[in-house]
Length: 118
Image (cartoon, rainbow, N blue to C red; front, top):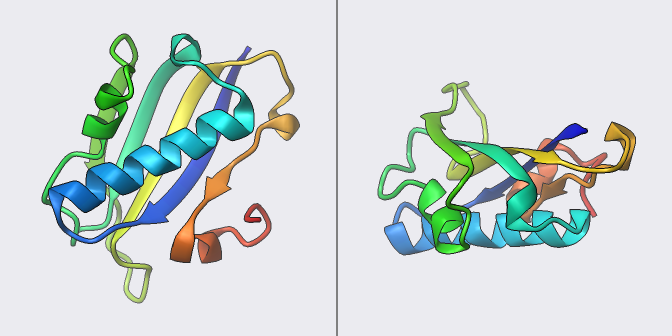
């Protein structure tokens, strides 16, 4: 079955920070959901408008996710929203119900979904 996994983190507007934080977010999602790269169908990344130094999808490619579709887009610019934010939606083949999926929100992005954050 195909499941959607959500997550978010924050980064500074440098290529190193964007890749490092996107990579950490994916790593934590993979660990929490016991995923391997072969289960990934696609990953959609969005960034707030202040993050433009690198594509967060570069972190996924560096992790060996080479057969899945990756897309990066700019997040809606909502007044007063969290800045420096990278959001992700991972579509993966998983043998569990949607309610068993573990979403991951790191750093200040945990405030986006306190009900799902540790």
